[in-house]
Amino acid sequence: MKTASKLVALLGLGALLPFAAMADTVEQAYLESCRKGPDVPVPSAVVAPRVQSCFIGQTVEVEFTVDAYGKPSNFSVLNFADGYLAETVVDALKQWQFTPAHRAGVPVAEKVILPVHVVDGPAAGEGYAAN
Image (cartoon, rainbow, N blue to C red; front, side):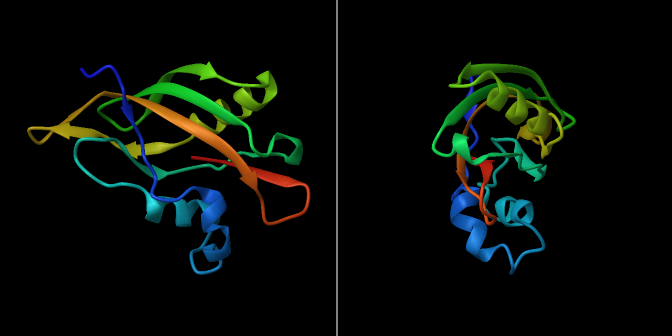
């Protein structure tokens, strides 16, 4: 297994917020923007953690494994500025579902490093954690 692969989004949630009205939700807009391919786990259901606006601009980098069934586990926070923020982000990531990575057509477990940035939310005083 590779040491870790970056899960890459073309746009973060913050950049997608103006388009959220076109999609059902901000989360749906995020799903539509994700990089797709057999070599990386692809999010199929996400929960965007809502955090206090005082965390805007901060990043939490989380490493986890997406198993061959698309379930994330073995979370490790690599860097963070605030314990509450890190816990909120990990709690949301635990609810995500993925289409697992494939090798030779077979689903495999893959380690992922996901930097989660807190960006402005659509409501005053609200922030979204996004990657």
